[in-house]
Structure formats: C-alpha cells, structure tokens
Length: 85
Image (cartoon, rainbow, N blue to C red):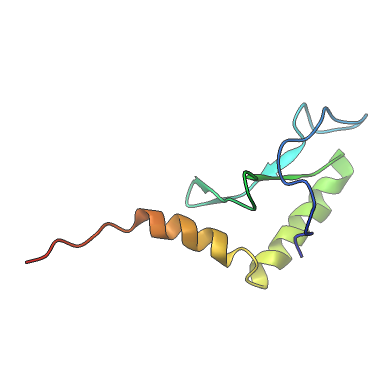
C-alpha cells in the first residue's frame, strides 16, 4: 500500500490549497516516530483534498502488516537487557 519510491521525507512548499508549509503525515507508534525508509519519517500528503485518501491508505497498510517492521524497530528499542543472577 505504501508506494515504493514515493517521497516519504520532507515536502516542498504546498501548492494552492495545501495544508501548510510541510504537507506531510508523520506516523507514530506509542509516541515514537516510525521510520518508513532510510531517513524518511513522514508521508507527503500533497494538497488538503488528498489527506483523507492518504490516511485511508495508511490504515490499509497497517491492516496488511506493512508497518509491522517499523513498529518492531521501535518496540525493540524499548527492551532493556535482563540482568544475570
């Protein structure tokens, strides 16, 4: 569902009708930013009318398990090594 090669990093200034200076959607898991690719932490939305379809695409990607690896990276960073007795 998440398009390979799509720019998931910083976006240029918006076109008319844009959401703001940075038209991106940042995904988080338990308040930790998900890495969507190398140095990519957000999905470029584009114009305001593309926000809902973009969120729907992300929901489908989550349902299909496409973000599991990114969430596992976050989860693994929380694990603390156990002390030996």
